[in-house]
Length: 127
Image (cartoon, rainbow, N blue to C red; front, side):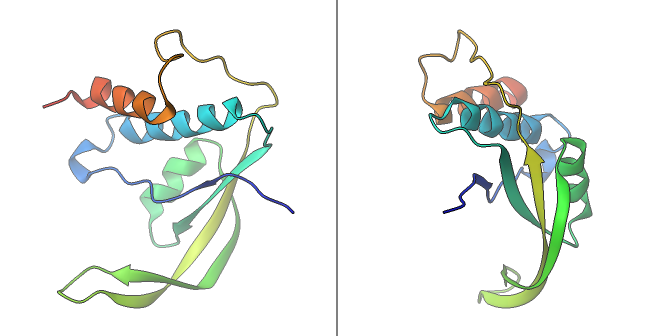
């Protein structure tokens, strides 16, 4: 069975964009995958075709478009009732390095999600 890591539902609040938060989250995910016992050679994701900022964000980080799927649906959050509306999603892939990345000493004893939380707090400051 062909399985691979899938990055899903990454979102950064609009006023925190361009601060490095998104990059830190993606880096943390990629680093975590390389720490897993099973070796994976790639990570994949989907992004809406109309979301050009997100596509450029991922392309800058080494992701390449594989194909577009016009049969996808998403929830329209405008209004009081959620509606499923058609959208085209682009599947993207990044090849991961063959060697594992070394965890920093400050996070070697922390679970993955705490590493992400700590990184985000450092970047945007906790309130």
